[in-house]
Length: 398
Image (cartoon, rainbow, N blue to C red; front, side, top):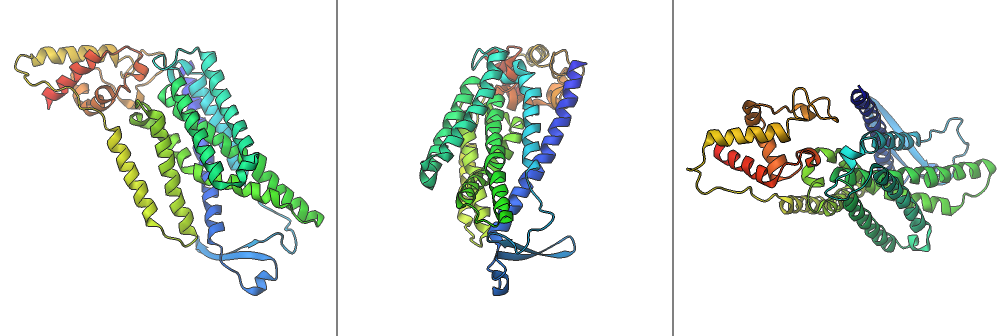
């Protein structure tokens, strides 16, 4: 029953996390597009203090949008703020992290092949890295170095590299990736909470008081908003990365994570420029070529090949494979799993008979032979010899 309750909590908060994340990132994308698409307004609008405007059509209606340089002629009674999307996305994400990776640390976060951590140690390190990363990021962005775009960018890249490498040396591949995502999400939500919203409040307060808004708030908000813009696509990848063990279970998973972060941030740059009327398709070509190169470099090594199979009894080999699968895989991948974590077969994949093994042979090859993603965390102790036996059976079957 406990597993069933946790599954429901995971479902509810994952659903809420996706909903609020869509709202947050959607609003972020829209306002970046809006800001970059504003056109030079006519003089009569400039006289009213309007910096830029645009016209759009959606939902059967035509919209006129204008942005003031500083303040409107009269503050409206209702001013819409965009902050709860960010806050609820972060809150639901942290709850989901707790439910899956902290309550289930022994199953999802701790990999004894990587680091021999206790549950308390793993949780403490996870929270410490998330909080520490935010503090270091804030110190960097508040320092004089932040005024130099190239310098601050280089420092943040080095910082991200260090965090990714550290996480990969402490946690399981999935745990490392999700914590890197938690770091990014915390920085982004922190930017909204500590810089962007306070800056907007300072702007409104100055307008109401009839004072000139301080330029430093606008400068800081612009810097942190820019960071958020480039971090959106890497964060979206990490949200779906647990479906792709070829990335997080790779020997160099931290480098792959950094490469995908760079590629997706580069792709985001294309759309940012496009909003400004600058069409640099070479950016997308470079991103696509980098993705292809990454896929080639990540390709698994070929399974061992048997030159002469005449002396191998197919029936005996099939029996060996069935025995291996039952012992190593069917505790989770069964119609009635006996594993303490999974109450139903993960992904609905049940492999208990030879018919099941034939049906799921491509997945077995990808997850257990070409990579060592399965059994999950190798919790049942499948040996390399057993993987080779399955590989030989797959070769003879084909």
